[in-house]
Structure formats: C-alpha cells, structure tokens
Length: 236
Ligand code: 6GU
Image (cartoon, rainbow, N blue to C red; front, top):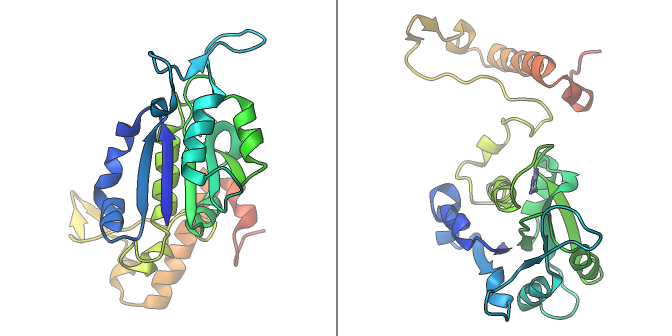
C-alpha cells in the first residue's frame, strides 16, 4: 500500500517511523510519503490560506496549492487512488471504513487546517477519482493531521502482514460489532484483585462463553446503540 499525505505540518507524521507501522514501512508493506503543501505555493510568504468569500471568522485554504500538490501525486488525469479528506463534516470513521481503506492500493490524505479547504478542491477531484470526507468523531480538532494519523494507524494494521499474529485482529473491539472482553495476565492475584477464576479453569468452552457475556455486558452498559448490529446471540 502507498500512502501520500499533503499537510502544512509534515513533521507531524514522523511518529509513523516508529512502532508497528514503522516496522511495516521498513518491511516494504506500507510506503508513506509526506508532502509539504507550502512547497506548492509561489509567493514569498508561501501563503496557503485566505479570507472566506461571504465573510465570517477564520481562514480558508486556497485551492491552487492543493491542486498543484495533488496533481503532483496523482497526475493530471483520472486516478485509481482514493482521496481521503479528514473533515468534521465527513462520514464517521468506523472499523468498517478502516477495513475499506486497508484494501486500497493507494491512499492520498489531504489534511486541511483553519476552517477547511476551498470546496472546489473536493468538487474537482471528485470528477477524477474517488473522494471520501471522513470525520474522526463529533468534536473539533485544529486540523486533519491527527485524524489522518488515526485513520492510517487503524487501516495500516489491517494490511496483511503488518500485525504479526492475524488472530489478534479477530478478537478485538469493533471487529465483531461489540466491545472487547477484559484481558488478564500473571500474577493471578494483584493488589488483592483476583483474575476471574473461569480463566484459570482450562475449560475453553466456558472461557469463550464468559468472554462473550463480558462483551455483551460491556457493550450494553457503555455503547447500547451497538447492540442492534451485533451478529449472533444479540439479546432481545
Ligand atoms: Cl477529520 N478534522 C478536524 N479538523 N476535526 C475533526 C475531525 C477531522 N474529526 C473530528 N473532528
């Protein structure tokens, strides 16, 4: 998978050099290239924003640097790449979307700052490639960088080979539509807190049943709205 990121803060993405995704990049499973939007300006101040037409507070990112930057990545015709624009006005990011992104060969992230990017950038590229506006959730970030990072981490770890043991992807929160069950390791008693005895029983059937029950309990308590979509033994 190839990931291009356009941003005015390319340094933000240096954390992708470390940890799991860093290893995936070294192994050649994921190639990440950042592009500084200001390199595609032509004025002395490297201006990327301007005041909004119609008035209002804040600044809007000018379309020209975006056009030059994105053309440098996808060429000047149609492209098979998927353009992801992190935006609080986008569709909510989910594990299902992470799986869709992980199946792409080429992702391009356009990280806006200020009050967003001139709408014509999205309108223009939507005529040449697939474009998705995706939101991390219902709260406000200063820009798309942190959101892009979250999406890259969530999708990147689903690329085959990135996570060493693929089974660890199966039993985690949201993979089956439920929150995950609580996990325990040694010692069996810590500061007076015991590991639930069923986990020490060696009875795989009872362990699996207990874990499922914990998933349903947790989900009902914290995220009841998820239960409508859970496969299998959803309570009435
Ligand atoms: Cl994707 N961008 C920004 N700027 N704020 C957000 C967001 C994205 N998702 C939630 N808040």
